[in-house]
Structures are given as C-alpha cells and as structure tokens.
Image (cartoon, rainbow over all chains, first blue to last red; front, side, top):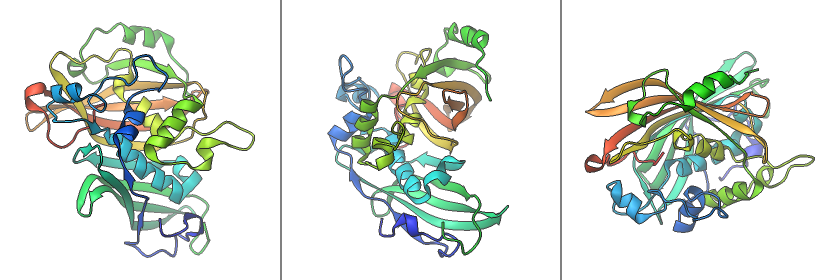
Length: 157
Length: 163
C-alpha cells in the first residue's frame, strides 16, 4: 500500500481515493497451505477441489482452484491494515465470488472510499472492494463498511 | 452473553439429512475447535501476511488471523455436513461482520442455521446464518453465506469456492 495506514486522516481523504494491497501470487504451495488442512495431519493434504486434481475434475473443473476465502483473506488483510481495531468492532464485508482463481494467478486486493457519514461522533465509512487477477478482471467484488468510533472530523485516526 | 443449549445441540446432531435437503430453521451440528500457533502461521504463509499481531503479542498469545475464522466456519466443517452423491456446493456470496478477535489455543465454537432456501436460474441456493463464538460465548464473527448446489454435470462456471 502506497500510504502508511497509521497516518490516515479519514475525515480528510477524498472520496474515490483507492488503496491497494500487496499483490500475492497464489502458488500451488500457498493454495495447499490454505486448503490442505494442518500440515501435520495424517494424509495431508486433505483431498478437495483446491488440493486434488481428481476432486477438481469430479467437480467439473480442469484443474485445482484456490478457495474463494483465500482471496477474501487478502481483502480482509488490507482492511485490517487500514482500520486495525476498528475493523473488529463491527466491520462488515459483503462480497460476491465472480471467477475462480487458478494456481499461479496473482491476486491484488483494493478498496475505494465511496461514502463517509458522521454518526454519533464517529465516522461511518463505506468502501468498494475488489480482488483482481489483472487490471479489469475482478475475481471478488463487494463492499465494506466500518465505523470509526470516537472520531470527529479533523481528528487524526 | 450467549449460553450454549446442549439439549438443542444433541437434537441437531441426529439429523441424517443431505445438505441440499435442509430447510429454514434446520441446523448443522456445531463445531468446537481451537487454532494452534502452527496452523495460524501456516495460513499466514498462505496469505503472505506476517503482521506482528498474528505472530506474537506482548503479554498474550498471538491473534488468530481473521480469515481462519471464516475458513473454520465454512459449513463443510460441521460434523453433520453431508453432500448427496454427485452433488457439489460452492459459495456464491458472503456477508461477514467482525465483532471481536480470537487468540491461538482459545476454545471456539461455530453454529450454523439455515435461514433461507431459494431457487435462481434453476439452481438451488441456501442462505446460512453462521456464528463464531469465543470461549465466553461472545459472538466474534457473524456471517450470512449463500451457497449454490449443482450436480456434477452442471458445474457453475464462475462463482466457485469449495465450501
């Protein structure tokens, strides 16, 4: 992310400002680490359509795909980086899974500030969210909402 | 504070029902689990996210990465989840509210209840209310996940997440 999240003054940030997380290539190793179960479990990795080609083919796929939750995790990581403890006090994420992510795809999370409302001495922020595998190709899209309690316009959060 | 209802749980565990047959009000058997430090760090590698709070915490245990709470609250983790032969199910939509954090080795519990069953474009969908509770029974994640069922011959092209 180009901006240091800790120095953000959300009451001053222009609407439509975008924040981008670090791109991550979902290698087979990362997909297996996420969807294969604990490394020390007997028979690791668990057989499912994220870890096993035969299981993927049974599901009508030509190869394994990453769990949508793994890409969602990259988005959540960016939101936690931006909002820290505020995120765990009612942060909401609403996403749709649009396309599968295959091994070797690079996923980039991004959020864009779309609305800012003063409520009860705090700021309610709404952000458009997405994960892309290349510019213009979203695999996840949705919205996030977070209440920055105790903040007032002009206060540095 | 929420209290566990063990009598209700015992009733739910006995339901011998395939996932696609479940109806609003039905519940999957709850899951009690803990996340150990090794599994947490395994997921940090999977996500390339090595924030200090997940690795160590002054005076306390590392925080569980929040996506692990989603990972463990997929209904496929329920002891009573069963798909019918030749049927699959994937995520279509996920709404999550984060209400707290969990620490490694903390006892946690997930509860699932079917909220809605509907059809769209000839496919069966289920909306599932999911709650992740901490060791004190406090809700730390509230989730409204929509899943779509499909047969092997009609795999959905896009909205795939093997939940």
